[in-house]
Amino acid sequence: MTTPVFNREYVRSWVLRQLGYPTVRVELDEDQLNDSIDSAIDEVAPWVVQPKFITVPVQERIDLSEYDIDAAYVINVHKTEVGYQANSSVPQIDVFNPMSYYNVIGTRVMIYDTLERGLYDRANQSAKDNISFRYIKPYLYLDIGYPSSTDCVIEYSPTISDVDAFMDGMEDNRIYRKYVKGFSLAYARKILAEVRGKYNVDGSPVTVNAEDQASRAESEITALREEIRDTVNTQFIMD
Image (cartoon, rainbow, N blue to C red; front, side, top):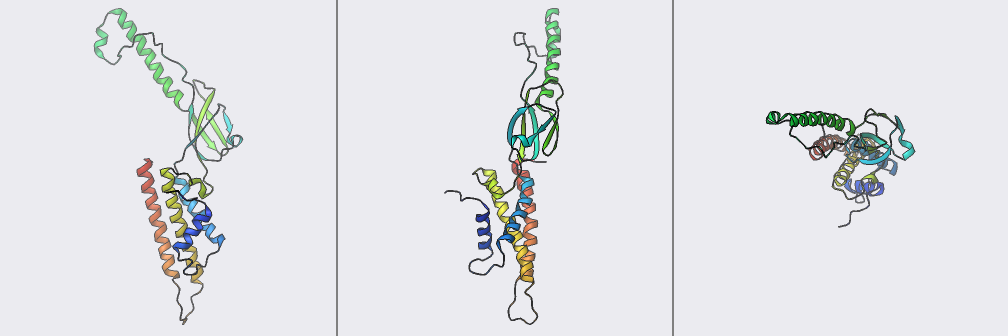
């Protein structure tokens, strides 16, 4: 089954159908529906785990706007060069095995040499993997440190500006689409309650369900917030 195009028109039409259109009149215009969708994006965007990567030269300050990146936040910055490499021609000794220290003098020299090199490699490995950074949009400030690296890989989460960001068929995007629709409906219901609440007239033979819509909207928003928090924490193992 082909996934329908997921854009504003699709979400607006879906929300109207859930509210009873075209069987009943829904007193919302296009701007109000768009406001509901924008509120939904604001609810969902902070939970999106959708990393992208770009390789750029290492600098103390990098203007990400030069690379046409609209990053909501930077997740990590990785160095691309390994730096020091152990000499593979030297025999590898298990430096953590106490029995190794009972070997002959020549072997002990090798052990100490291997231990020193291993400690150096461990420190070097820790230093090379990531670069400390501070992101103040659009500038990324790097603490380059030691060892140096000519390039770095920036892992970032793109800014979610519209619903079509969830269009592709990835499983996590399918989950996010569900919440965009759910929050859009809840916020549309909230606006509809405000509109219908203006129609209350004492003694009128016709009644409107403004209070019911308002109550449902609040309960739906609360339930969706709890559900997206639990779903994302479970699926993506976030703190």
